Length: 70
Image (cartoon, rainbow, N blue to C red):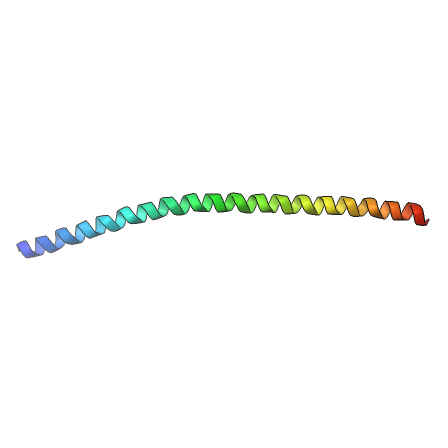
């Protein structure tokens, strides 16, 4: 019976090591996801700003062309 208890104790020790590693992986993954989400939001904001500026510039160019051609 002591051999069985030894095996159970070893398996519990291995299981606790896996739990610790999984907790560390979860913490790191959560941190990384936060940084990636922030970068994606920043890129999305920059992209929207560029499109707005291009739209306004295009409208101004069209107004200038219209003024000088008509």
